[in-house]
Image (cartoon, rainbow, N blue to C red; front, side, top):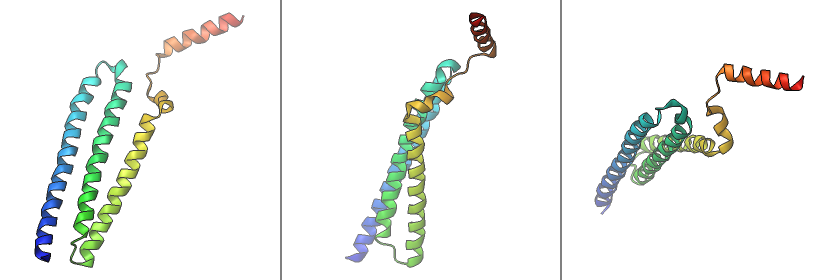
Length: 138
């Protein structure tokens, strides 16, 4: 009975890992091609590129979540403390990656953080506005 459980669990882990791989590959390909498309023209690229990064981050979080699920299932049949420790370390690393990725995605979602990526006007336009302000004050 135990051998059957080990076999089924190992196969389920392989399937879930394959799902995670597919999710990450699809997200990466999509981000690559959509990112190239929104990179031109450069003026419109910043807000659109943020959206691409946000969507790509969601794909990566989903992939990491599937991998973590596979690790959790795999720990249920780990025959040795060494394998259990390795899987635990992998789970901790993936959890931290997921946490920091989620934090970065929250920063991308925050509308107040859009300002640093907004295109800056040419320096001649800034000088003209400064001159207009100085002349208006005279």
